[in-house]
Amino acid sequence: MTDKTNDPVAMWQKMMGEMEKGFNSFANQAMSSPEFSQAMNRAGGVAAGAQKQLGDLMEKYLVTMNLPSREQVTGLAERLQAIEGQIGEIKLMLSQIAASAGVAQGTDSALRPPRTKRPPSENGGQT
Amino acid sequence: MNAPAGLDFASIPERIQSEVQRAIQRSIKGVEYFSTSGPSLGSTPKDVLHSRGTMSLYHYRPMSDEIYRVPVLIVMATTNRGYILDLVPGQSFIEFLLKRGYDVYMLDWSAPRPEEKSLRMEDYVLDFIPDCIRRVQADSGEQDVSVIGYCFGGVLSLLYGSIHKDGPMKNLICFTTPIDFREMKLFSNFSDRRYFDVDHLVDSVGNVPPEMILSSFEMLRPASRTVSQIQLWENIWNDEFVKSYRMFDRWATDTLPLAGEYFRAITKDLMWDNKLFNDTMSVGGRAARLEDIKVPILHAVAEHDHIVPYDAAKHLIAKIGSADKEEVMLKGGHVSLVAGANAVKRLWPKLDSWLGKRST
Image 1 (tube, one colour):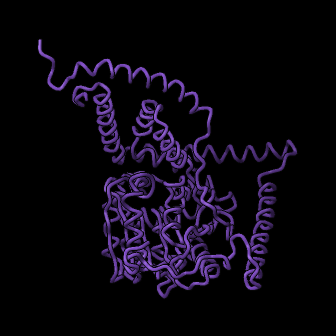
Image 2: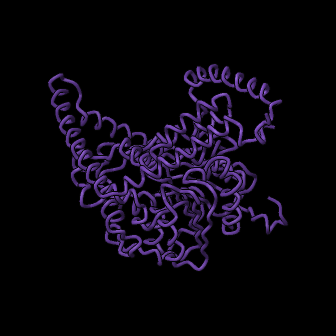
């Protein structure tokens, strides 16, 4: 077997690992300064402002093009979500009714395993 | 001339042959990599018990003949998706719990919609979690519920537990949960109140975009993404490595936006004023003090966690009011603590032995 100290692949991997650690550590030190925070947040603030302006512009553009606005699409999504919610509630109610009537269902609680499990230490080591 | 110590000339042709074969494999597998979609994640059978906007409550179908009396609710971090705990069979924390006899539920998050920008901390702590707990109680028929919170899911669980001190939470398990936000040094510097105008950001963008969340995570280790891509190329001949890379890479880049008001509260109350650590935190006017949590608690932290450094997490156990409390430090990082080969042999068995005897 080739000695790791002379294996070029192992040496390359080690070098990469060291470089990664070194660069991360150097960058972390640089990013810990208040100057970095100031510069980063200045840039972030400008980007956020630009994003808002772009959003407003797009809204006007969509209205001009007679396309549905975000608000209208969101409204539809909300209605769909309400319908999904109601279906979920109906499904749950049906499961509960079926369970109380003793009707077997795929995932219904009537088919769930009993809640009798004990930890292995109390079972003489069995799981 | 003597050969350098340790260099075995006889093995060189063999090594060259192996490297040539790997180079060929890299080319073949490289094409495969870009033409396939990677393993299917989060596929343990489950039912959606309830879904409301950003919140979803799942119930996983039991996989053992008998289960523990107390069901388990996992509260996922709001920045990431829950499938990190349900990667693929054999590497799924959920599957592990099910096979060990737990009845498992998960409170998972999807991207908050634009109209959900007004969700506040109150909505998460005083509405979403209690609503899920009630539904778990109704579905399981049990009053007691154990809660597992991962990262910020742990913070939400702590806030919930400290406010709802009379139950029904029976046990609390936190994975890599920060409470001293001053010690999250880089995040703390990024959000320095002198330079970070959180009001301007939230008022401008509504929900905080996922790219911003992802880039702030990646900035903690700026070289790591490039190095991991180089490592991927080196190991692309190795199917197991590629599978694992794809699972974790997909999850790590699948970051969620954060609801604007919720982000504002995190920044002001936790990052700036460190209220949870200083015992001055309140949610919706209700005091949230860690000393009010009296249930058994396990806190698992990772030795090499670069997102939640140990200094940010280490005071949790001391500040909790429970008599039955334990911190366990395990090898690994923020993600490898809970998922992947490292977790399979370290955290999961530890959790099982701790929780099993408290779940009857």
